[in-house]
Image 1 (tube, one colour):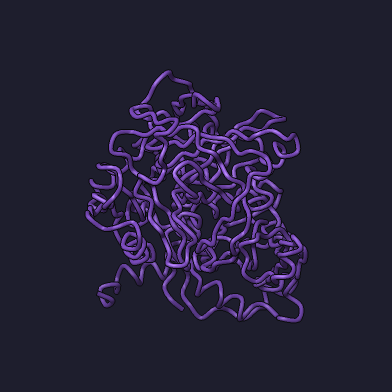
Image 2 (cartoon, rainbow, N blue to C red):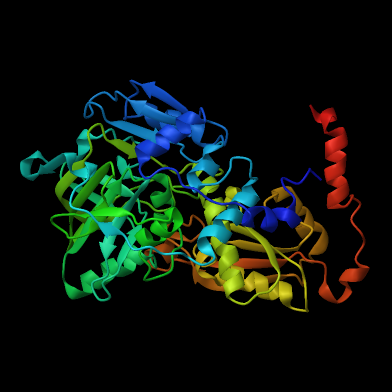
Length: 498
């Protein structure tokens, strides 16, 4: 057994006493805050064809690596840059607005308690102008290829300007605005394509436009502040505008401008906004792209195309890059923190008592492996927690395994979770299987013939790794000291590890 990464029993108390403070409102202010922490490195002169992607792959797997700002990219718009690896080191805490001394489980719990529990919402405020309109490009001058968009992986089918971006769309029936993160591929100077997995809010809205036979207005925000990107890639409830949630987190309204051609709200201080329309039936081959499970899970397929009608950008614009790699990587880090908080909140709001913690593990890119700890109160409690974790909104998409453990296990420590599974579960009686669950074309385990038929479902295993409730008091004791004694031992003899 390795030393737990944090004190499980004190995580709630530590997190609830923290007052959050998000100190930035745009990507440039975030960079300055990260520089104060000594966690930004400038690299100039690398090309977009392969070198930026290669360098990114090196740093994105290392939690302690700096954020890297690539500039002077040959053949690109002078002054334009690419930022990668924003979510690492101490800047993880800064990004979410919390002190830099919190453990990752405390940070996730602070995010849940302060932001997600009540889902504070402040509507955005429309302003007339903003830095995003420093440069306005329309007509024959439109050329999205002039930005330093990397080819992120060797096997990618093209350059993906949309990795750390979000798409702004409006529901044609209900009128609410969605900000969702979907990969965006450059086709040519005046068109891009974006893949949206079935069931995602942006996909639902797009299908409504298609059913109406109407073009879908879209504004793609490239280079928003990291908190806005994180909310665009999180499971915000259906019908809720992410700008309202971001405003609630900051404690003040997000300033947006109205994109002139689509009427969609976009951040006034974004770096780049690409505005256009998706015409029904207008598709082109898209992909492949090295995706978040660590595979080229979906091959080249026809996907909708957005015709670009305008591009807006700040002077010296910055692309926020967040390209997936084989996990664990940057995407795994930020999803683990935010999704773990949302999963726990989903389980609690479903009525499950005494949920101690939840963790969406990095090795599964915060989707494939969920661990939930509970303080058992009744027979069936662990089964209830596991099934709800598996099928709640934040846990349902593209999951694989859910492991439920007792409250003496640190759910963020993979070794502890697996130890509990190996010593407290029985393969014949402790595993439930769910079939026909919501997955994605990106899932590499779905058979090719099922994908061809449009069947993107998978199965789930829910593993009860708690001490059997009806004889849990007779279960053999663990041969380790109490949390209090472990803490004392660390204080007295921790110097032996240095």
